[in-house]
Image (cartoon, rainbow, N blue to C red; front, side, top):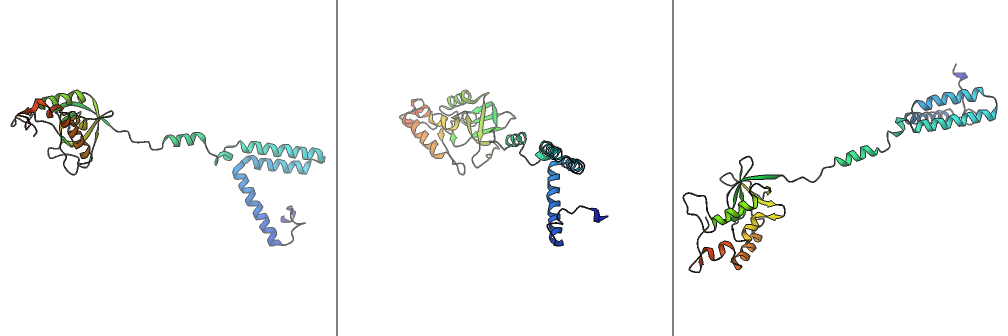
Amino acid sequence: MLQNIPDPLGKFVTNKYLKFFLYFLALGVFANIVSRFGIHLLFGAVVLYIAYKNITDEKIKWGVITIITLAILILGNNSPKSHENQPNRKEENRVENTKPQEPVEELYLVTKVIDGDTIEIEGGKRVRYIGIDTPETVDPNRPTGCYGKEASNKNSELVLNKKVRLVKDVSDTDRYDRLLRYVYIDDTFINDYLVKEGYAKASTYAPDVKFSEQFAASEREARENKRGLWGSACEVGGEIVKHLR
């Protein structure tokens, strides 16, 4: 039965090992093409073989073979398998859209102002401004400090019922379990603003010293320009009264 199988290489290759290798190579190429073009190639190969064997007119035969071959290529390129390894633009766009984005900083609503340097945010957590200190206004055991009410009022004006951005330095909380944070509204750095305008003095404690030099410079500016608590409102006998905690 095997003797009836066509041997196209028989006339050209006599070495049986080389012939086996070439047939094996051709089989691998054929299998790869089938995996790419799918059932269209198998069906087309059968039709081509039938046409080749049964059409006797050479012109008609090769015309039919050409048409069938073109049909195989067209159908094969449009088959799902032919596109498996090609880039999918929708998939690429979906992947691009899922790339990690810059983290969005969370904003917190200020629901209460305790004094000039302490606030309460939604959820009841209190926040102490890092690096500054305003005159005392809420401690029942201590007198109200000079310019303390003004500092508290200014703080309310700046942040009450507004959403603020909170930024940590090193420490998370103080001994009273208040969050230690730098506070921002848009581009306004509230901690520094209060110092620069004379509502607070610079008061930095390690390890939270990121803006210590900036706060010290803002305090010098406020002193030199006699703003707020550095002005005449808190002067007694030419000296600034003790007004801070």
